[in-house]
Length: 169
Image 1 (cartoon, helix red, strand yellow):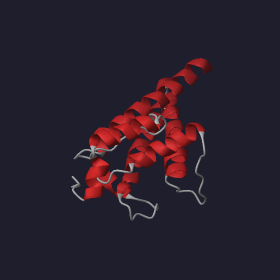
Image 2 (spheres, helix red, strand yellow):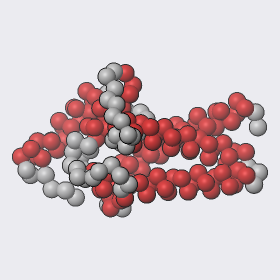
Image 3 (cartoon, helix red, strand yellow):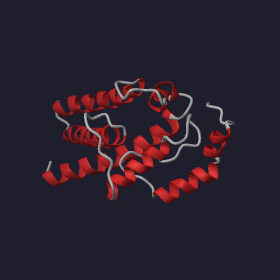
Image 4 (tube, helix red, strand yellow):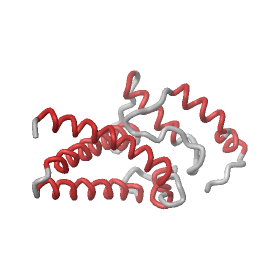
């Protein structure tokens, strides 16, 4: 396989992983099936140490390990897909765990640009308590902050929480 084909596979895999992560986050993690693990991530009193939600990372790591194993047996395609899944995992760790949730030994809040947009979008995701009416389910792509604010306003979730009428699912 050519280096250009390998690079294309890795880039397409990272893009596919963002779509997959969005879908898993939106409909599994915030759904009745996956909320049991993901709820730990939305608890206000967690200390940013390991949480049940980190099991999702283990699941994706196992998928990458299996793909690397298949690749080692001779499948170039599986190998480069595994590299893409791993690259996505590294990007996720730096943006989500490190930048947004401060699971680094230091704190950095971006002031402008792409990193600021990702940071704000995910903070807005956590503005709603519980699993319903959240916004911004992606991890490396984020809608504009204005769009997210409009979604939150339309949903009425923040008003219900302020008034004490929000029931967690």
